Length: 152
Image (tube, rainbow, N blue to C red; front, side):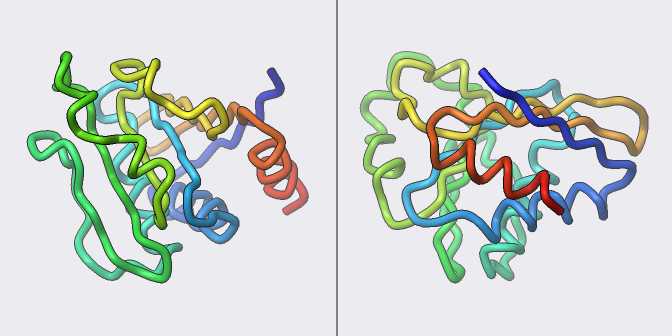
């Protein structure tokens, strides 16, 4: 699998990367975010939200599992860390195939339910302000999206 790495040196650069990705997203797109606590998954999601025209405060849906935000394109922000067997009852596939963009934190908890085509993103903490984002596209659409990002 082809991967693409982007490094950011501060929160502003993380938001800019997320905004660039958001500008290429369309309804039904799925992004997964994997990384340790404090790595920057929610900060990245805030940048995606801003890029989708969402002006609401975005925070981690740790206890609610899914938060929905309305913008130019809806955002479905999921934190599935606390899920066990009840994930099938949440109807996640309806979100994945819906009219918005799904961003999923801790996707390894629901691997079997994830769509085959998606953009997996590994977020790594490098220092207090520096982060590394490894983009792993699954499917032609996401490969093209990553290649477009490389041109900038």
